[in-house]
Image 1 (cartoon, helix red, strand yellow):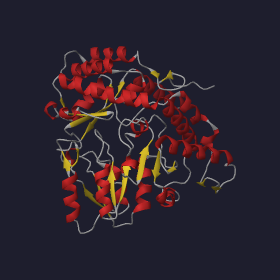
Image 2 (cartoon, rainbow, N blue to C red):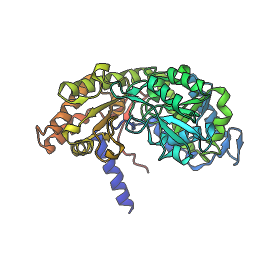
Image 3 (tube, one colour):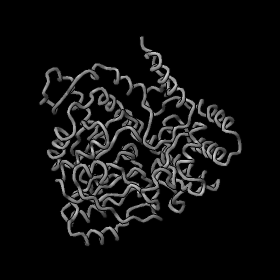
Image 4 (cartoon, rainbow, N blue to C red):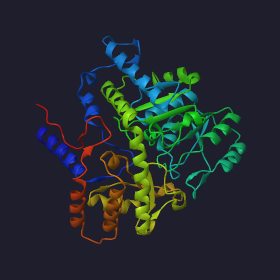
Length: 422
């Protein structure tokens, strides 16, 4: 069984080493970050808050967590940060615990409009007992329709207690200032889920939600922010106590100290390299979108420059749908996901109109605009069956073999090698 476990893990590493990873919610960490996964922090519990633990032996954990809080506040320019949540959904749940009661109304994006499942009635928000209403959405601009949303709020008998911004399919900055104005008029708070764009915010290439009017920012730390899989919650000082209670004891006990140490390392990387990394991500996303569009694909929002984030969305409904295309591309080693688009019914989730493409991982490997043209050509070859799948798979392997090293870190390192431990 042990040998089989090793075989599975090595095969997984080999697969991604020679594939083109375009999943918008993933990234690779540096050896600097990974080193802390193997530290003794991974054996320990730290239930409670800094200086107020329920176990002994946490003196160094307290120092570590205090450093994580300090770096988060400095990197994002926020009053308060809680670094204990272990996932983006957990961070969202903590915010809901802090700011709402069961039965309250919130407003968020529907899933076809890009909203994350944790913002919706069938996931974290629903489990909290919240009544979810959806923003009006402008399909052409791929963003919230502020004027129609205002009218919608005016018609609601029960006014929202929280307006949730941020998305899972997230191409353009959200109208934070305008939604914050509506929220203030009805005595509500604004929660901005920055999970997908946290690295772009750190790199000053997207928007600054707190300064634009958000009260709380939640985020996972492993997408455009190239850290371990965990999360943060940031807020204005006036909400610090409520947010901290929402996290602990609300949704977190022990909070995986080894990955917290890795997060600190990723913060240091982003302070040094974040602006250059974020700038190249956006350049690459725009170039890949343009290159696919020039080959005849229905990339959304060409009149708006396609995207201002790491993501692009392509309507492949005329080609058989997102499920068909995503599976076809996986066979040749191009890894992306099917995705609902705003004009889809949620019942189409099994085979939606769209595919979603993210460039943050290939950017971390050193790819630039020229490589985006190559990726577009490989996608085109596969979808239009210009060569056999076997031939395209070999082309993908040859191309990717040139990009297997993590960049934008203090010491470049292999991205996909499986460490051999003695």
